[in-house]
Length: 134
Image 1 (cartoon, rainbow, N blue to C red):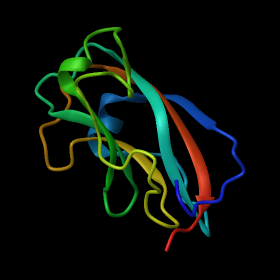
Image 2: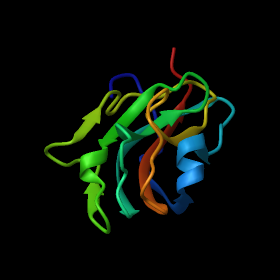
Image 3: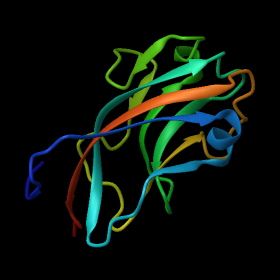
């Protein structure tokens, strides 16, 4: 992370979303004035499967820049799907700050099929907070 200053504290947000919240895209980390998030790890556990969805993604709030996408095939009932898995996970901005002054959402693939057969999604997002990037 060249030219990035942070306090070095890894933070974690743990929660549960309904399938409707995942399909709509739900804010899980609020925007922070003057700061940006760097997603560095985490996991999903689905109750049910992701059905015909392409993936469930961690994205920034406004531009929908994807930090990490977990393929629907990795989200079978009760299976722990770590973001650092060897397959089925795509890191688009690993170790890179998301948008300045933007929150973080969990969402189905933007423009993709809805998550259909899961009832809820447990999640953990590990992140750093850094000053806005230029």
